[in-house]
Amino acid sequence: MNIEETIFKRQSCRTYSQTPLDEETIEEIKTFIKQAKPLNKNIKWDYDLVTSNEVKSLLRWDAPHYLLLFSEEKENYKENIGFIFQQLDLYLQSRNIGSCWLGMVSPNSNYKNKNPQQKFIITISFGKPATTTHRKIEEFNRKKLEEITDTADEKLKPAQYAPSATNSQPWYFTHNNDGTYNIYRKNFGFIKKRTIGKWNPIDIGITLAHLYITNKETFNFHIEENPSEKKGYTYEGTFEL
Ligand SMILES: Cc1cc2nc3c(=O)[nH]c(=O)nc-3n(C[C@H](O)[C@H](O)[C@H](O)COP(=O)(O)O)c2cc1C
Image (cartoon, rainbow, N blue to C red):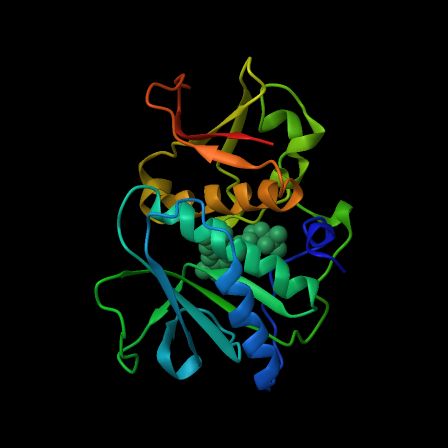
């Protein structure tokens, strides 16, 4: 299956075979990460590939591989991590490798950080799935297109299907007169802000990755100095499709 089709079939994988992937597959994954497009090329980022011995997890399951993601803390660094590594999530699932973004998993004391200048952001698990990594489009639990945009627009459908922390889907899209779009992030209340709030900027990068993958030649992102404000939301950027 190609990566574009995967957008409408993927699902988070939480049951894995504990057998590691072969070396060749791991090398292909590393090669894919190297060529992934960043949202903001001014930000340094890095990752480390580890096993369950090096992570602390509040979950009841393990995966054979974990990617710890790191970044410099500047500008839209969380969106950038979401954007780069959602391309990987799609690539893995297009190859029938299961994966899951994991806010609840972080490095433990066995982990020796090779790059202390950068901050740990989030983890992704991956490996051979014990069951299928794919589902039917009608099995997705997502907001309706009309709920996430000012004008229902088929071009935004790939964004609608993006994964997000606790499936919060914090994105909202508006159409500008010049044909560009704005993306906003929902401001959650006090409680939710303390839990999923730190991951919601990652979700924004994730949904933008779906729009990039489906509009590779034309996707262009920038941040306006004086954007239109939207009540209850934070402006995240402007893009072309
Ligand atoms: C930033 C982020 C953090 C997440 N953290 C966790 C987590 O800690 N544990 C977990 O089981 N799933 C986690 N998920 C997976 C989401 O729950 C999942 O993507 C969402 O419910 C939509 O389901 P789907 O990915 O199967 O489409 C996370 C997803 C994102 C994008």
